Amino acid sequence: MEPTYNELLNSLKPLKSTGNAPVVYDLFAGCGGLGLGFEAAGFRTVGFEMSEDACATYNRNLHGSCNKVILHPGQDLGGKPDVIIGGPPCQPFSVGGLQNGKQDERNGFPAFLSAVEKYAPRFVLFENVRGMLYKNHKYLDLIQDQLRSLGYIVEHKLYNAVRFGVPQNRERLIVVGHRGAWRPPKPSLQRHFTAGEALGELAMQIPPNARFLTPSMDEYVAKYERASKCINPRDLHLHLPSRTVTCRNLYGATGDMLRIRLLDGRRRMLTVREAARLQSFPDWFEFAGSEESQFQQIGNAVPPLLAKALAVAVRTSLMSGDLDREAIRLAAESGKQFELGI
Image 1 (cartoon, rainbow, N blue to C red):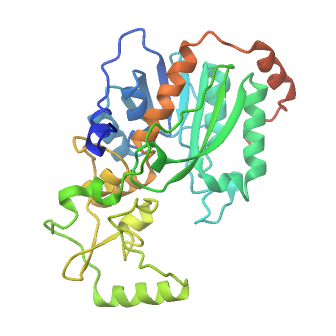
Image 2: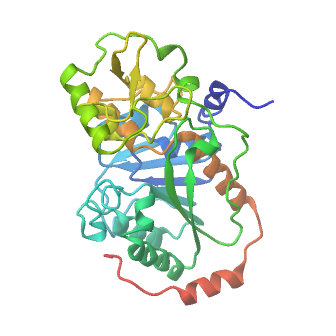
């Protein structure tokens, strides 16, 4: 019998790791979505994040500590991690933005690659938007070649979080650098959870300070949907998985694409807790900062259920003695040398 959505969320409680548990450096850690998945799989995490609110959220909910820091190449982070993970800012590569890639000042890959070179972890993993596969695919090739030059076998794959229990169609690029024992996670569920299953009793409630679309907002949305030849209104359809949860459609003026249509016809924007449920954050997970900051943290996060599936696969890889040294040698020889300022 397959688990319910709540049972899956209950599996995300961070494990109190032992002293010999592998250490993960979580770069561009955000509020801890990726870190939560790794702690639930038995890792010890250390986060590094520039947002004060996101660090506070991380420290409030995870066993590991988050350091408020602006990451840059050559930085001394101390210690010796077994794994380096992270979600370098996606805005430079998102199809919803300008896609300025490496020219964007928010590009965090030079700092990420510098940390990998400095600490030579046994495993590397980063997450980003699928836009890296398109206009910026050459830059993605450079990043992967840099990892190969550091001695890693590098693979990338596009994952849809809905296949791992997240009630949301959310495609994200996952790139891993390993030593020859990587087995990508496979979905274990035979079905997808819906937005209605995730929101449960909250869906048709009217919480205090609820935000509703005004008549002028409804008119704007109607014009937008006609212009884009939208067949179904861009509301949250409770019998289906949600559209991708982003900062914009959580806190934008019209709650673009993520609105609950009530029985009386009004359209209500999501609350922080509802947005968190769609991202697979358990109800005990508390966010710090203003409402806008909390929505930003949620929209930017890696869904913890997807993160845990990846973390379990990483843990299995680290425990395996099946290291393909010939493949590592060939990867290093085929990798080109690049300056870390790419």
